[in-house]
Amino acid sequence: MTIKATRRQALGLLLEGAGVAAAAGAGLTAFVGTAKSKGFEPLPPGADDAFYDKCIRCGLCVKACPYDTLKLAKLAAKVPYGTPYFEPRKIPCYMCEDIPCVKVCPSGALDRKLGSIRKARMGIAAIDPNSCLSWQGLRCEVCYRDCPLRNEALLLKPHPRELSKHAVFVPVIDPDHCTGCGLCVYGCPTQVPAINIIDPKTFLGRIGEHYRLGWREDQPHHPGNPADKPELKKPTAPAEPGGLDFLNNMDDPLL
Ligand code: SF4
Ligand code: SF4
Ligand code: SF4
Image 1 (spheres, rainbow, N blue to C red):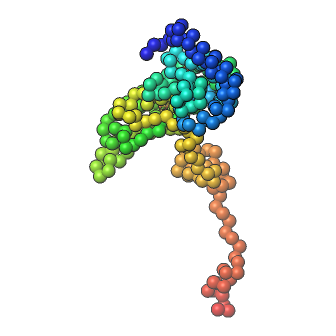
Image 2 (image 1 turned 90 degrees about the horizontal axis):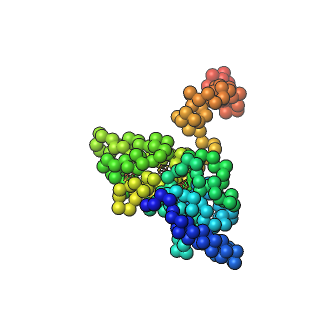
């Protein structure tokens, strides 16, 4: 893998990007619109919901990436033609601290307000327990060691091993921290990676606001939570006696 694109490669990328942009101007926009639903591939850091509308397919982010991670989509790709994207199994995003791909984006499709690469959400890692060596009871943990946000985005947790009294340690993803960089996918030793980067929008659920997980420290009603409102802890006042209480009163001299 070359770290820097050669001048010829860079020129080729610029011409490719310029060609795509020109084609878009000539009416490719309609095609791009229909191609959105083909599938998911991780996009560069800073791409948000408006990315497809803002990206002009110029290829400057591709040229700026020092690891050759990014490439412009060909017609057969899952993302619309000309879109910058990456395939983590081939070359992941190395999470450059200065995020050069975002800095050069002229259209704002890659949001400069991203600030820190740790806040990027290029996708989310998901593990297939049936093919993960650690989940099957073998020591692996390559993804854990390769994750740049180890113990934040990717944690090792004990998991019971069927009838054995011994536990296994398995990789678990924290969606609040995973950037979707794909370094875990790149390192996974299984024939087909047991960990993949997928679309957070189609994977992540959300618990309703009305649920209270009182055993979690970050939730209301946890005994140690300073944000818990003292008035909520007050015992409820006994209800006034009603008709049923009157009928059920066995001490009533009239009964
Ligand atoms: S953060 Fe760095 S490695 Fe990742 S896509 Fe941008 S330039 Fe490439
Ligand atoms: S994609 Fe994998 S390596 Fe990257 S932050 Fe998420 S868990 Fe870590
Ligand atoms: S690198 Fe792959 S096989 Fe190993 S623990 Fe991670 S997901 Fe499982």
